[in-house]
Amino acid sequence: MKNYPTFKDNDYFIQCANDKDFTVMDVDKIVPEAHRFNQVSRGLLNLNEPIIMTNRKSGKLVMFGKADSDDIVGLDGKIHNGILLTLLDESLCFCGFDKLPNKRGVTANLKVDFAKKLQPNNAFILDAQVTEARGRKVTINGKIESLNGDPIATASCLLVEPKWFKYFSWIDLF
Image (cartoon, rainbow, N blue to C red; front, side, top):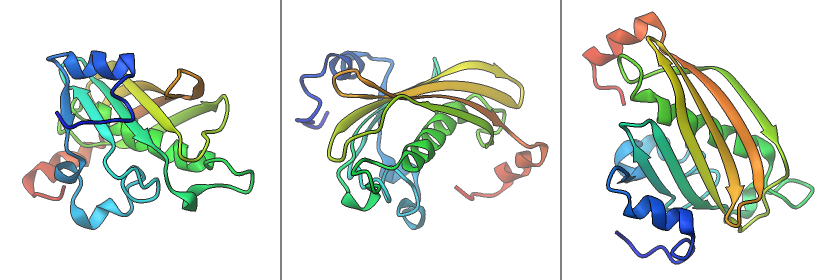
């Protein structure tokens, strides 16, 4: 595993990195190059190389990142909550895709409660967990915390697979 100096002393990072059920995901292999700029974690948030670990068997995703772009700072000097909302949407959906019949879906409902705002240039942990999977519907809960455990936001996402998505498996779109 690469050397991640920002997180190497974080207990949760160490726990996930040492868990044989977690796999480190290479974002560049998941997201096509043409879409990376529009993806929040690689484009807008400029996370450079976020560390994304997944346990696909249990439906868990953990992202370790650092918001180091001045382009996403609001008038109050903090990261705009709309950016974090979109990051939660992307991450919670990705976490739930494996539990859908054809591994693709759309957000049907996303509820986010913000406890505070994320400071620019601060590291954070995004934690997502599938809580229910039934047919073409998956519920995922998640949260964003600062590196020292201060809550930033909690979220709940209902991910659905439209019936016609089964036809996407016939062609290689993404």
